[in-house]
Image: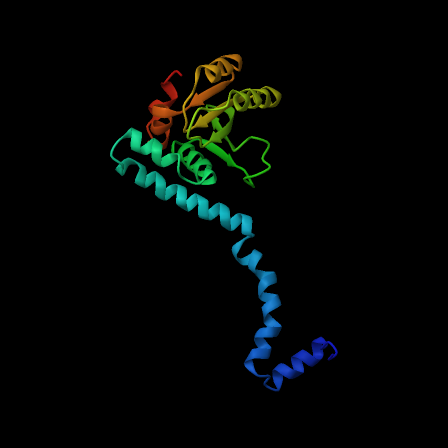
Length: 195
């Protein structure tokens, strides 16, 4: 086993013309230490990638044949990309937003938006079937605890049990179906649809 080289020995070897592969062996750990500073952490890079995907989908969505095809498409995308689409759509409408620093372990809040000075929590669910009334009630409890309002946004269907849960949490507003498509298309009319 060879002894570890000191800093002076490394510099001396570099001055004497160490073969290129030694240089790469010496600099590789340094490069890995600098990567997060140059390009961000893995989490930050993932967030940027999902935000780019969300922007591409927002451009593609209006090109689909009809609203039914758009909802089917939304049900198939990555759930984190769906969250980023919502945040981007709110930002494009001039709202101040706050994205989460991470996707999992967010406590059920997928982002925040301020509309007319009012803070709204966002919970995004990319369902393909009926939404869970338990999810609605849990989100309502969180909204009450935070003393603000909330948007429960989903791509699925809202059954009668879930509608009853929504009536029990008046500070939570549902965004789904046509209202969701209006929001994603940039149509400010999404705010005026009573659901």
